[in-house]
Every structure is written in C-alpha cells, then in structure tokens.
Length: 168
Image (cartoon, rainbow, N blue to C red):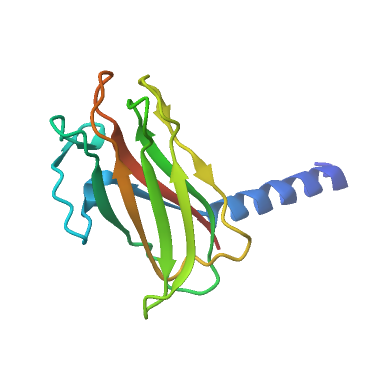
C-alpha cells in the first residue's frame, strides 16, 4: 500500500484537531440551580419546562436570582472562551439579563461581564454570547446575578440557563 506525504499530513491534522476539540469543556447550568438573590428579593418566581420566570403580574416587578455556577476545573491552565445566557424574552420593554462573575477564594472579583437579551414580544429563543479576554481562567468561583422581567401580554420571560465554554 502506497502512503503519500499528503495522506499522512491530512491524518495528523485530523488527529490534532480531534485532540484539541476533546480538550474543550462545556459547563451547562440550568436555571433550576438559581434561587432568590441574597439581598432578600421577595418577588415570586416559578420553574417550568422552559426555566425560571417571574410571577408578579399584579405589580410588574421582575425577579432577581442568584445562580452558583460550579465549574469543576480546579487547575490553573484552563481558560474561559465563551459565556452564553439562554433565555426566552417575551417582555417588549425589558431584557432578561445576567451579570456573571468569577472570584477567587477571598471573594475578589477576577472577571465580570453583563449579558442581556433583546427586549421582545416574540417567542424566539435567544442566546447572547460574550467572549472573555484571552487568558481569563476557568478556575475559581463562578456565579451570576440574573434579572427576569415581569410577565407581559406575550407571556412569561424565562431564564433557561447559562453556558460557560472552556479550553484547557
């Protein structure tokens, strides 16, 4: 069997690409991991098959939720490469939004970013994504403070989850 240099090069490139892809991690957090923020938010919220949503139809207040995002990477060589908010926004005047934080063991903020949907009266799924600066570590304590707007005539807005993509 004759093996050419081009065939060997192509196979090596495919194996390296597969190895690089296998080293990436995906941390997917459902909104069910969230709970009322520690500042004493009293706005009721519920979970259904779409995620968390505010239920305060009478007063028009949204819900603030605290979401721990426990990454399992404790090493120092992994980096965050993407952060996505997954939501349905049915409020034409307000956005589903999250401020995502990475802190060290002493509570010092090492990285933070705000992510929000586009205000909409439609039913489309939205997944706005941000890309942290190169070198943003994955180790540490990740958490988010999220806001879900009140119900609107188009229905409930939902926080479905938060996704953190990482590379090692």
